Length: 199
Image (cartoon, rainbow, N blue to C red; front, side, top):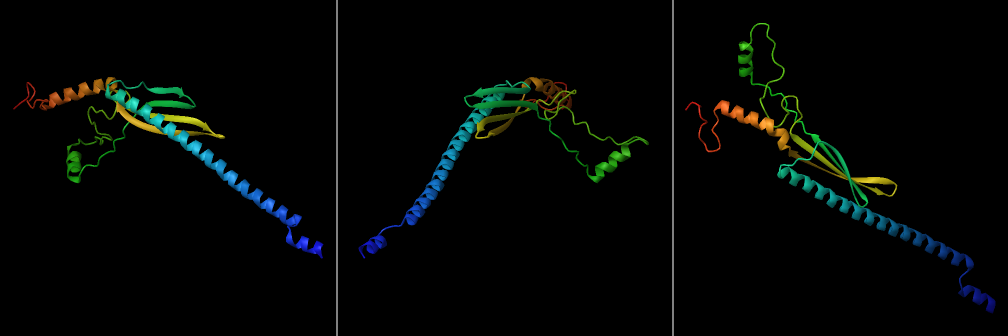
């Protein structure tokens, strides 16, 4: 009888094995969640660092634009620690949509055409900083900054885009705009009409 009482008060080997298996599963799940949390924390820290780096490079480019020193067209690669920085500068061509004239103006323009003369497809807008003059690229610049780093099995990136005006490329257009303003008799900055303009 004593042997039967002892057996009833203890754990069997099967119960001990089941408890160990449950603890093993719990530790595996908790350990996996902890490792994933550490990986995500590390990735978030690197993404934050890459974002700060991209913002710093973009601020430097914008400061250069403010001082009249636009970056040259093309691509430039740099590295900063574990990060690679790509700076791509391209002309930014603005697409100006064709404006439809009101019907009254359209009829007047049609009446002014000579017989057999075709309607012009595009209107001459004159000198503009939005599009290049004389077949040149636009003086507006689009700067795309990409910061890349390796993360696990792949590569992660952060991208910033900024725009600016290249003063050297715009010099010809600005002088053409000044000449057009003088020809039209537009007052100068002092408010006085240009010399030779009718009053």
